[in-house]
Length: 550
Image 1 (cartoon, helix red, strand yellow):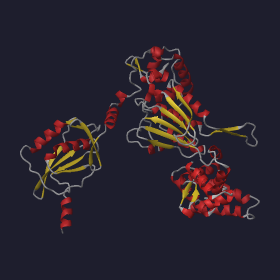
Image 2 (image 1 turned 90 degrees about the vertical axis):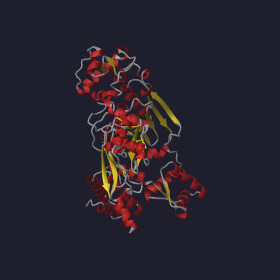
Image 3 (image 1 turned 180 degrees about the horizontal axis):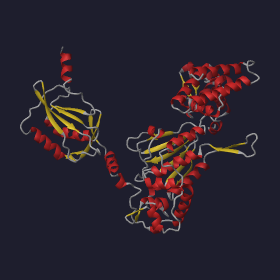
Image 4 (image 1 turned 30 degrees about the horizontal axis):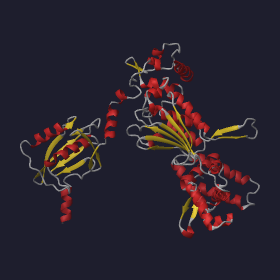
């Protein structure tokens, strides 16, 4: 009976949440005002005064001046002043006060000179950085870095040759109609690079003779690491200075000096075929995005980090309000952090203005046969990562594996897994050596150990297996995969489901690939003569049935 009664009492007021707060009495006035700031800066909410921490209605004594004094106290200690709706309510003969707080437009309401926010049931102090970010967001048009006047600069700091080259390229690419013989100041005005008759930050960073004289942080840093971690040796480290248009070309030059260009001769073609490890269009887009959308108020610099298995583009800044990295993978509007930089890059076709850049990066990597690029927000930087396929021969060769370790990789490719006993047998070595060498491959993140003791065996990590399977699907070279043991076939089906779910491949494209390989299998002269080919056909058929591709 007591339990039911308590539930009934609790039901008289809503439970505490992001938008509901209970307070026992007006003696907690400071906490009440802090919560009003928090509600104003979050989603709004209601404060019930006269309710205990357990939700029990205790009531409050309301005199002639109680509401007026409460109203005045809230007004005096909030900035900007908050005037919430205050009402009273009687529940079972006990009066309570209800304060209705609306969400403020800019989330900048202070209580006693401090800003608060609501997180779950708690009222928390807002960090200085968070509060400053909200102020910048409110006044972003007035406080935009690119439109700010660059102090101590004048027209002598502008490189006329750079501006002339830009006008020629912009006219050729997008039809920009500004004659290169136009006076320097007029050109800059027409490009909106002059404010109040003075040069903007954008003018200096785009066409300045020495931009780093004004903005040291505008320099970029390019690093080539040996291996796959930042703790590895730095093979090359190069700071890239100059204007931001020139930086794009100089950083690209560094990248192409440190990635491989594959070449081959195709039958029936006279010319040698060539292909970079990563798609050049995606490199240009990621680089141009990092430079145009970075936060130039940050003292951090753009970084391009090249590892044996990936490239990372580090862009100091933040995502637009309300965005996550998932937003970048979907259709989204264009919200440039520095519109003047973005406009200049648009004129010379370094970027588009339609908010399609990240979508195109994903598309170009897929078409190149690479895994989908990763987008990560660290809280201070946006990081875009292009991955190699770790099972590609050229990557394996770069890991400095010995002949036995390479044999283990090939064994796992064929049979799906390997254990220590098998490794000892096929390599004719002792257990201690096998343990050391397999552990070395695990450290290089090519394989992982599953199980313990005698049941321990080594396989390719799921994420890596999916990337490799995707690569072979894109190439239409899946024959060796589908002729493996049952465990590998199940992994293939699971990996394919993941690719379909992430929309990295469509059902129609998948079906087309499977049918082509099936046709090739049937047409081979060894079909039905060797178990390898009949097994391959049967497993192709199973994949199609399981994934409803019949």
